[in-house]
Image (cartoon, rainbow, N blue to C red; front, side):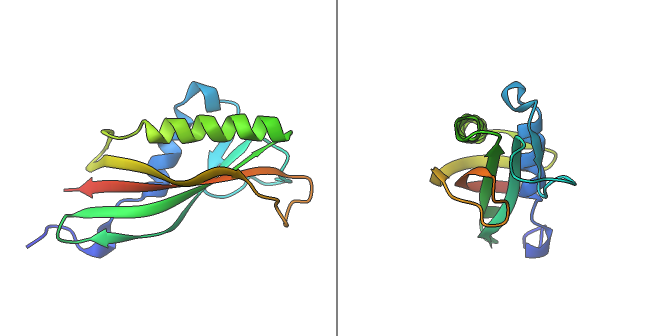
Length: 136
């Protein structure tokens, strides 16, 4: 019988946040799962959201879809930042975080330009990655 129940899957948003916060190329960007106070879409930021995915009980893995919303003061800055975040996550295969092991990261979509209807002056790119994270 498995030692973890589906309710105990890892916090992949926190894993992604911690991974991106250690990257030198993202050091001057805000990285979290919610925007900072006063955010207007023109700051350098990477916002992380779990969009879905599934726990595979027989394999003891979580397979979440993680969306990155990447902002910058100019479109070119947002694009560069999106590519840096994407590259860092695609290279995360084999990474261990506590009792979680990232066994695979696959790009599902992006990065792609998408207007932001909340922040009128925003320069935003989106990308979606699928993680496979094993827990013990």
